[in-house]
Length: 368
Image 1 (cartoon, helix red, strand yellow):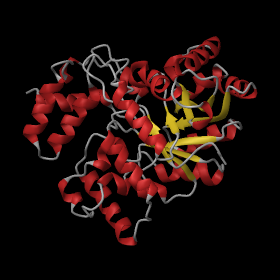
Image 2 (image 1 turned 90 degrees about the horizontal axis):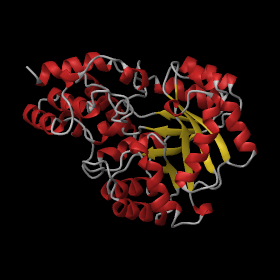
Image 3 (image 1 turned 135 degrees about the vertical axis):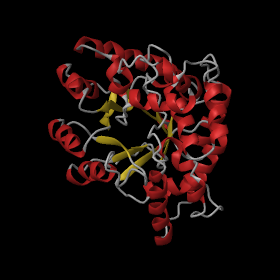
């Protein structure tokens, strides 16, 4: 369907390592881009809100300036924080083209569609503007990324006939989750509306790449824990692209090996993945995927994902490691107790977490 797309592994340029001043090592990223392209993959996913605006810049410097435009595929997004009125959209879009250094995007997504922002997109005629830009050749395919209920997804796809692809959170932990309802969203998009699927969070923000001790024993040590998560997602034919937010070469090499030498999960492996999902749920971890959307609007500069990570480590019994991680985070950020409960973080959280209350739990755990 999308002839220009090579392979099913997509490079999500969202989690690249940054130093204390939020700079990216472009030389390191260049090596990863070169390896990714050399192995026959060419799909890159970005957004202006990723990495404080540097995700698009990184792609320009390490991909666009080096490779012919027809050799790679770029997906960019219109994020809710990027516009407040209809007149904002075209200038913002043109600025994205300029920043990335291209004259069109292969895919352009209405970003993080959910109940609390969909009316903003409708009021500002964002979908109609995207269709106009497609008619002008500046967008090849229109899509959405989605974080809400199956019923609301059905509403959007019924109303927005120009949507061609749907990006969903999908993994073996969320597949039968009563909160994320990944299976139901998948079936609404792929079966009822016949839309090709792009998957985000296949390893659930790293959760499925670093399993609890009780779960590790259920998987063969010959393969990485992350590879099982990818193989689960790859078993669905309706999924044409699977994103991975890789930030080091070892992750990229492991993923390339998994995708180039794909082996379907055996019945026993599937059974074990269900058991692992059950084990993970018993820990009652904070379900943060470390997307970082909450960080931009926090007036107290609290490193919310890092504090939640510390809590989850503590919750698994590694108390000293958790305390050390928490303290190291506080060297450059404020503690959980500095939260003023403004709620900005909750308005943008794709996982719909009650962040203010959860920061209270973090405070109780680490700040007696």
